[in-house]
Length: 120
Image (cartoon, rainbow, N blue to C red; front, side, top):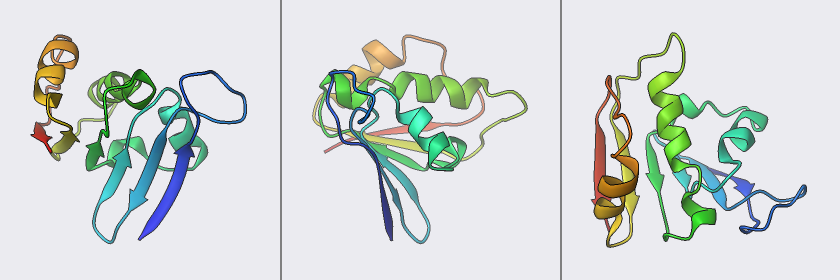
């Protein structure tokens, strides 16, 4: 198992720290914990392919923890010459399904893969 800290900052912009996000690589899963602003850029800098993420865990609804989730989903759906097939699991706190339905799902949905939503 390997943990990569992608961001340990806050909602306050900083040149030294990105908003909260961590990448966890297990033997068979690639997991993101929180998806704050700058996460996609930090993944690229860490040479981690965002297209291979299996699961995203959101700890809570502060914008610095969810700010780039929609951009991630949009990237998966619109990367040229890429058609994701494997399911993506999104896990969040109570109310996450409603958040996804109102905020995220109101935009164009993925057309080549399924998203499984779970609340904890």
